[in-house]
Amino acid sequence: MDAWKNGKLYARNELTISAYDHGFLYGLGFFETFRTYGGQVFLFDEHWMRLCRALADFRMTMPYDKETILAAVRALTDANNGEDGYFRLNVSAGDHDIGLQPSQYEKPTVILFRKTLHITQRGAEKKAIWLKTTRNSPESANRHKSHHFANNVQARFEVESLAKHEGVFLTVEGYVAEGITSNIFWVKDKKIYTPSLATGILAGITREWILHNFEVEEGLFTKEVLEAADEVFITNSVQEIVSIKEIDGKQFLGNHGPVYVELHDAYVKCIQEERTVR
Image 1 (cartoon, rainbow, N blue to C red):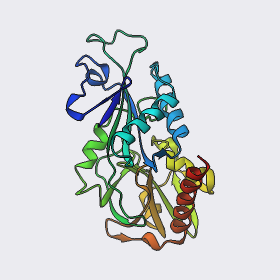
Image 2: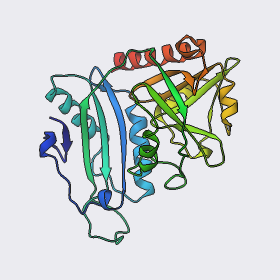
Image 3: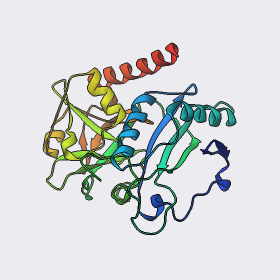
Image 4: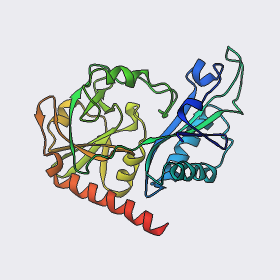
């Protein structure tokens, strides 16, 4: 089984949505991506709250509670021989007529997708490039993880392989923003830096975990500031924390960086502790 929709499990070729869904017609939809560890989702409450903030911003009603979604995660895991997976919880605006008639969306389409989790070895490094595509502005006051992904897709065309590379956005003003599928951090003289949300970036779940557990300076930084760093690393909920060994030929400490090693070890320990508590 590849997905859960409205309480039922579906194989990939069985799953459908209406062509009149406003997620298709107008790109109105939001999602969270996460993985499981021993069948459990790490930091699920944080994913859930971020999704709920996006839905509230666009007057979309979530018809299921988080316990129902977690039960769906377990059902999909069981249906796939108990193997951990890559999940996407997707809430699309739902079936309506053509035109922007609704003043609120009370019956969205909710689908939990699952695919095989391709686990890369922890401590693996990536290379990165500065993207020619600039970061677009958010959908509203804050950026949500939404169907409005054309900017990311356009940027992805500049990168040979997201498995081994990352592209780093600059804003139109020239400030460092984020990666195509990640938030970015760097270290200079053992001090950690990351772009402010004022650059229009996504408030990543792993990013927030680092801000909560370590002292980090947020701000508006040019690429020259980052290029002077000792260490660079990126974060997302599926890949965890990944060191960057170079950007456009500029070398960094990669997975030998002492701050990266400290953060990475603390993150893995937190995952293990949460699994033990549950």
